[in-house]
Every structure is written in structure tokens, then in C-alpha cells.
Image 1: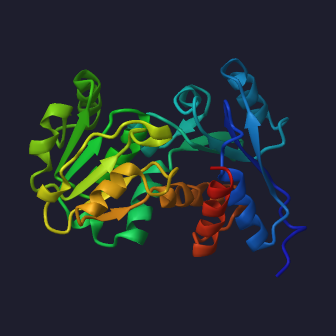
Image 2 (image 1 turned 90 degrees about the horizontal axis):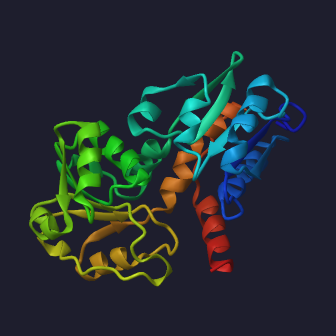
Amino acid sequence: MDRTAENPRQAFVIGHPIAHSRSPMIHRYWLQQAGLSGGYVPVDVAPAYLPSFFQALKDGSSGYIGGNVTVPHKEAVLELVDEIDDTARQIGAVNTVWLEDGRLMATNTDSLGFAANLDDSAPGWDRGKRAIVLGAGGASRAVIHALLARGFDEVFIVNRTRARASALAERFGPRVSAHGMGELADLMNGADLFVNTTTLGMAGTEVPSIDFSTMAEGGLVTDIVYVPLQTPLLAMARRQGRATADGLGMLLHQAVPGFHKWFGITPVVTPELRELVIADMEAHS
């Protein structure tokens, strides 16, 4: 059925800068597949203009029905919306907003995207009980939220700055503990899952040598970084015979709930979409 005249809605992704975002490619692909005439545009919003952008969104003068929020605005938006769901509140950041009955609603879909990616690429990943999360930045919060929601008993945050890891552990409660890099080797013994949430290996940065061989049988190594698709940490794990999962699926799956909120259709993450994004990554590498 042709729905091009039925739903000319407009959504956005805001950040500063924003030209690098692949979200427009993802959502425009789904719009085309669904035969919708709606749009999805990148908008560069400097921090000083964030309040006025959201005021225009609330009063309807912007013409948008909602959108995505990326760095550096994910935390600042918490103060600019009318209602925040439990997921965004627990993670402490927002990445998706939408208008509902005149109110501006907010959530964070990164946790869902992380879990859905592993459901797709490594079924059974959540049967494990012990997970290591490398890094204590903003991205790690969504990962920890997903791990706790999926029933992991122990989540070890390993970070160069232990104080930062400790603050994060306190946020999530007794199943989460903080550790320095010097403890990583011991923590790897019997671990079921290793997640890199840092920028290690990007742009040629040095990657420490990690012994993945002491993980539990069937242990999985994943990296939320997806440029390059095969990160140095994933390559290291594969050389040691470990199963790995790249981070591209997290980007694709986190986009699903927002598209449903804005356009009324639940899209599907297909191999074709994945290949489309990979081709774009290769063209701009």
C-alpha cells in the first residue's frame, strides 16, 4: 500500500557536530521501505541554542514530531523535556524524544540496542552471570543497564580512573563493582562477557594486550565501537579463539523504537541495511 501521502512527519537528530551521524541513512532507508513521505534530518545545535530548540519543539513551531539526541546533549536534555521514563533516568541520559498529547517525552534506547544486537549476533549471550565492562564513560551506563536487566549477577567496571568507576558502580547498586586496570587479568578468570565501551583502538590508539583465554567456556567479547567494524580488541579476541560481536548492530537496533514513536511503524533491522551502512563506512574511511 502506498502511504506516501498519509504521514508527512519530520524527525531529527541533533548534536554538535552532527555531520558524521549515520542515523539519517538508517531512518531514510526505513521511510523508503515503508513508502512514507516523512523525513529525518541532521541538525547541528550548539549547546547555547539547545533550550530554544527544545522550546520550539514543544510549542510546535519547529515542525518536528521528535528525534534523536547525540553528543554532547544527551544529559542536558534531561532538564528540557516534560517526562523521562525509568530507563533514561537510570542511565542518566536521553537519546530519543517525541511529542505525545502535547508533552515532550524522553527515553534512552541504547540499552535496548546493545541487547538486541547481541540477541541477533550471539544468541544465548545473556545466559552468563559475570560481565566485564571496560570503561566508565557515558556509553558504559547503557551497557550496564542492559546487563542488569538481562540478569547478570556480577558486573565489573574496569577503568583507568577507579574513582570514576566507583561513582558509576554506586549508581547501579550491589551487583556492580569498580576496579582499576591492574585488576583486569584476575577478573577475566571465568568471565562470561567482555564489553569494550572505550575508544581504545580508534584512530590508531594503542590497545593493551588482554588475555581472553581465561574467560569461561563460550565467553563472548564485544565492542560498542563500530568504526572500524573489526576493532583491534575484537581481532585480539578472535586470534585467541573467542567468539566476538561487533557494535554496528547496536546503532541499528537502538534506532527502532524512535522510528516507531515518530512514524507509527516498527521497522526491521535487515542484512541489506547493515550492508548499506558498512558500504558508507568504507567509502568514508
